[in-house]
Image (cartoon, rainbow, N blue to C red):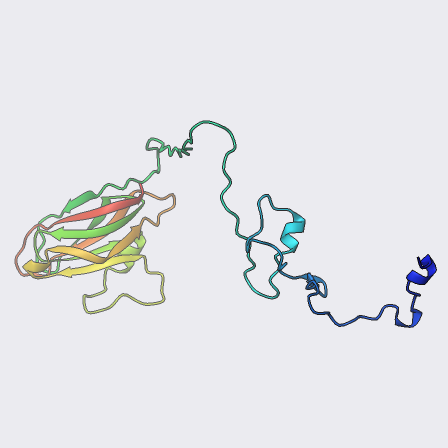
Length: 231
């Protein structure tokens, strides 16, 4: 039997630290640089359950995005039949209070005195501090104007129907309708008209001016259909 010293290969100091090329059948490296590789000996393409830091390090897929991080659903190990978990969300709506708007379509009407041709009636209609007007109806041909304040109403009194609303100026004018023909007496506002009261403190009123454009003297009734934004 040979001696132990004869069976042990002497240390080759000159080749110490040399990186040898991979041999046929060698185990592939599990890392390249500082990043791990996908372990070719893992039987499943997905991380096992339960997962661990060691398992996850063996599923790095190079520079691919996204990385595979799929997990099967966890099942309860307790006995008994399966159950259903119901999460109920309770939404509580408080009762209406001061200043609270409603989603109910409302109406507000005004009726002028008998107006001769070119005569104008002005005033304020109780509506809301802020409202979305979707329709207005008139009983006769009329020009209907709405304003945020009485000062805006007075300042706009001399503007004729042929003069457009000034652009780039804070006029306080909410809307200006000229409903002349019978087919226009019930006017659907598309887009809807958003108006508000500009007084301080704010009031639930909108200021109006109604003008009779015809030679026939008549009272004019105007009805607004609107939603409250702030009552």
